Length: 237
Image (cartoon, rainbow, N blue to C red):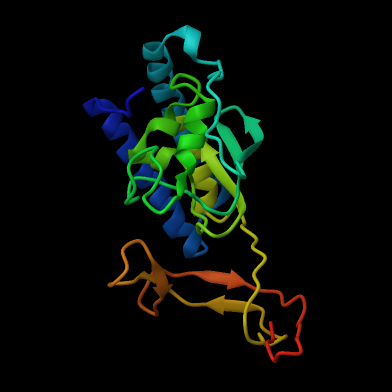
């Protein structure tokens, strides 16, 4: 149930991450051809299957496919597993839950001091270590591929095995997967706005918070203004 610890497994993980990083860089420069992408994808899947084989062998055959009978934490609105594919999950996150990970300030699987619940604790209540090993590995952010703000709700992609995690990571990092958000803004957004190209950086005074930063990581968001609303008390959205 532990994350890859042997020297060879760590080297394999490092090689795959380097390959995914190369794919991201080439895709960002618009020069990642189909043949190279297929080769990198094949490397990710083969290395993932190799490490998964070691994990499942060590865990024992009885715990590989089973779902833990433990009940999820009793909360007012609990997350929901919408899709369960081999090596991959799609989880609906309600407001108030934190997509926790290696950089999270909370304790692993514990309730935060302000009442927040880690999404990993929900997955760990549903799956044992053999069925979903990444859900127990903080070093891989418990299998979560991306974040959602705590007050928001939405879908979260999860890799439950190394093969599934790296397959999703490669697709996400090379923009094969798109994310859509519905946002309510205070103040009128220009109706002709269609794209926001601004870098994303980290706030120096707030750990784990992202801010708009021209020197930050490149980011591009496509926008479609759906509606403008106004109210009698002079609040426009």
